[in-house]
Amino acid sequence: MKFLDQCKIYVRSGNGGAGAVAFRREKFIEFGGPDGGDGGRGGDVWVVAQKDLNTLIDFRYQQHFKARSGTGGMGQNRSGPKGEDIEIKVPVGTQIMDEENEEVLYDMTEVGQRVCLCKGGDGGFGNAHYKTSTNRSPRQHGVGWPGEERWIWLRLKLIADAGLVGLPNAGKSTFLAASSRAKPKIADYPFTTLAPQLGVVGIDDREFVLADIPGLIEGAHEGAGLGDRFLGHVERCGVLLHLIDATSDDVATDYEIIRNELAEYGHGLDEKPSIVALNKIDALTMEDIAVQRMLLEEASGGDVRLVSGATGKGVIDILREIAAAVDADREARDTTKKPLSEPALP
Image 1 (cartoon, one colour):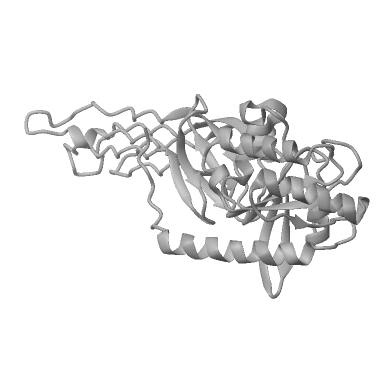
Image 2 (image 1 turned 180 degrees about the vertical axis):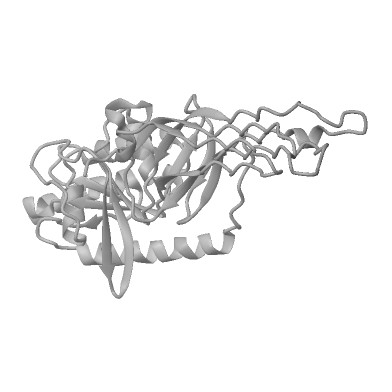
């Protein structure tokens, strides 16, 4: 399945049905009064967060969504039926943006969360509504109110517990494959991963979701290599695992490039708990590993873990450390979590 994390769609609610102009006509009733019913209300447009979706690819083939209009009123004071609502199903983690793709209108973070994007137009009154003491046979009726319409952007930000960051060819996909059942493409060249990948990691009877995003390059926060969109997929992560290629000529510079991109992107990415690991240690001698580790510890100002995604060395220890950080993040979220409320439409 192809991955799509951003798209623009058009939504329109249904028009209200017109009220009826009708009069009561029965045997032995000479002057039956007006009995035209009201028109039905137009259908609404709803967005629903669905559990089993993880991409916006369906919106590549359909970008227009229109609810049905209400049915007109009928005689004998019968109101027209309401127009049928439509539901637009999106993955959990989808943000609904305004037409300029700048303001977040809604954030779909919970399974089953529903928001109304456009309300259907009200139905028009039938002529029975306009009867007065001086106008016993009105022919006036309402035509119904038009529905609402708007263009919106859908932007998907994956919901994962932990995220992998690093330069291209740092071994992130290999680590994801070694720690989960995910089957990402693995090759010995940069930019092998072109779309974010998710994997479920099981360790010590616990599970968490690990996200692998394509490698970042300098200027990613400004959109270079689509980096700004890729960084959005780790915004919701509780902890970041920063992988550094041990075979690099300058591990300190590699570390600083990624840390600078996280800081420039904002949204608190540089403030998240992070674990720094020297990857691909199977390709170096013990002396070279010690030198690279020392240089990286000086640059990061903290401990550096040693790992090899290819051989599995050090993977279990890092996963346990990530799991502990994820548990701490979940506890913090539970204590500050507030009930969901639907904000007003702008």
